[in-house]
Length: 426
Image (tube, rainbow, N blue to C red; front, side, top):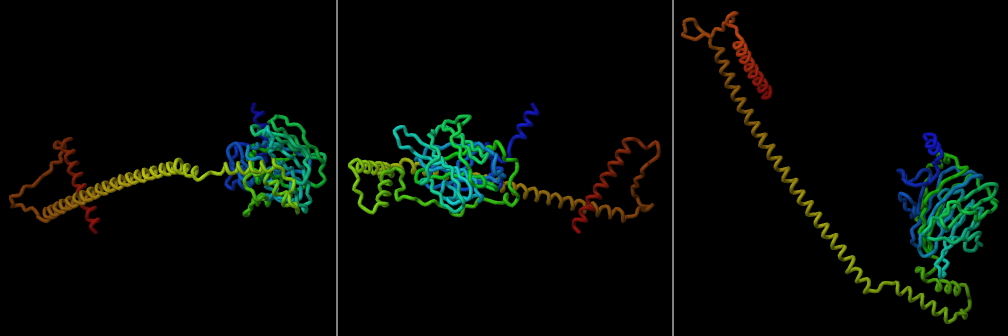
């Protein structure tokens, strides 16, 4: 049992990105760094939210070999407006970003592009469009102009297991849209460029059409050792300096599908569009009606403010006033307690001073009495009383000894108090 646990512990790869996710002081998880609109939760990493023109990325400093390695990815695409995509990159520039699924359109290396598409059919299906694209660092890639290598349907309810293998000069992709434990081979393609000294990154982005992309884990299964890049590479951070994706159409509402298509057709054509049919016009009017219906009227906005926002703000206002009143009461209680404590200390101080003064007066009087008694010498012919202590054996008893000791102790205490008082006055 112990050997099994030890083998499992030793089999863990520090380059894996697996839950539970815990960031360090620099916002990294192991060898992975993040940038963009990502959100790290305990069990998932949301790479991009379903918001137009937002992106997120994760890059690792793992030492990726040129060949003979593999990794398992697991992600989920939540329902948005049916667009966007994600990319798995093997490129020279660590932390690259841009307009191609959140990554650079011009790069030197290999890209596995996965475009999310709403099929716009009666079954409301969605598809993943796969491209494996090599680039020499000069060409600008546009996946919409490249024929896809593979297409598959998926469902938003299921996680998407994805496996990538690079060996024998080829890349092999395994994927399933129904969360199968062993996804089938969907694509095998030869690699014609060198993948030496490349960084591995995952990016996701929403465009005019949106999707939320969650990354569940990344686990290396072969070839990637438990090492990272050299120390200079370790210090690299992903810095996004005000990157924003610009809208490609004049219609920001994703409902405008036919309008967008017709507008692009008219923009490319130099002549008037004479091919419009009655059905096309009705469809465009229907789109306009949907957009208009989705826009809140003044009455709806006023109702929302009156019925929702106003009571909510009033509730918070009352809560704030109540908290302020509680703080005021607590402050008054603390002030009263402080004043009472101060008064007690003042009374104690005055009582102590009075007691010390009385003790000093008593000691002074006793001092004068002792000095006066010491200055008067007894005479033989005076009728004075002389106290004679009989210290003979017969006169010594336990009671006498205790009495003498008590008298001596009292005299010592009086002398000690007198000396302390004299020193304090000096």
